[in-house]
Image 1 (spheres, one colour):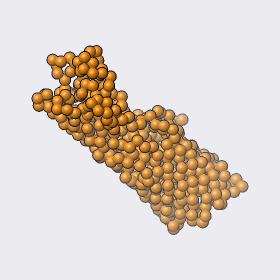
Image 2: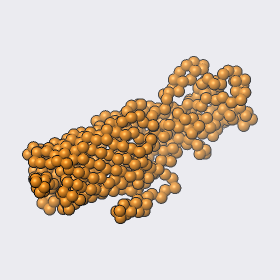
Image 3: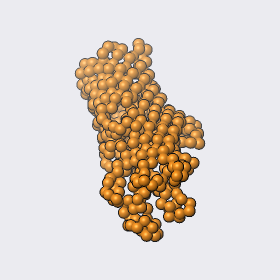
Image 4: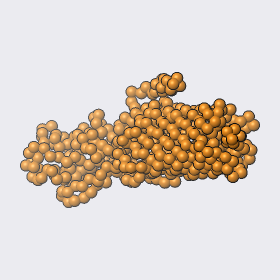
Length: 442
């Protein structure tokens, strides 16, 4: 248990010590003027009219309007979840062993896949170590351009004592008073970059059982900008960010920048080989990711996750196909569980070069908590609907293609070069995941 204590100590020591957390900085993009609340209209409200004070100001605050609050939650949860779900290296690499009559026999196969798994284990007493450096620049969220998100914030439905008499109508209906038709149009640009240095070690505890540890060190950089514009519904201006009714300021902007570095979500894993011969093999793999990365600084998912995989592989000369099928469990309420499926192959091009190709998928299981805000229906003076968010309300399935090369020196040191590209539009996605790595087995 000493290594667990060491990991916890390291995570504590490397935890970022920022007074301003990156998650808070995303919320800052919705704060304008001198107020501390998102979308608080500091210039609105007539101090000589108590009804006016009740009707304005804080009623655009997302914390007071549940549907609008979900927009901010949706964005921050998507970022934290994606950072906490970074791919990690395969558990083993060449040379590997199969077992004939209980005796380990070295297999003359390729250097193996990059992120997928094959059935072979290392063999008792053998060690596989390495590190990867992955770079991600997130570009879309459910297919929407992350640098050009459009949001519409609507007014709360106002209904207070004597409201019906003051505004000569039924204040329970959206649109009475008339200023409930006012909206705030907001254009949001998010620049999000993640660099992860992942260190891993796998040890052959038994001939058929490997145990491993993965330690990521993550750097997350955020560069955001927002521009808000109040769109009055009628000739009278009731809401403004600053100024006065006679000279209202109807637009405002905000920009934030920040970065954080620290230990991400640490994982432990085990692979047990059930069957292996010259032509095929079958193993079971399990791993657990602990929420050691700071969710508030966008270094981890903020929740424990566990993965179970059935691993199949075969060997046809220099060609080694493989398939992984399993399930991903997440302990929190924000991110859903997922069904995992990967198919691919690694091919020995030369004694020193391996090509690795995979199609990997993570298919959402169940319904998610962080759904898009519902459309808002305004009934008066005429019925109309407003969609609060330009992000499509689609499933967060993730499918990507991966292709890489492994180059092995005469001394056994392997260099890894890999690229992965999204094949669909679910979730928060980078344009490409580039990875460089080193591996060594002894």
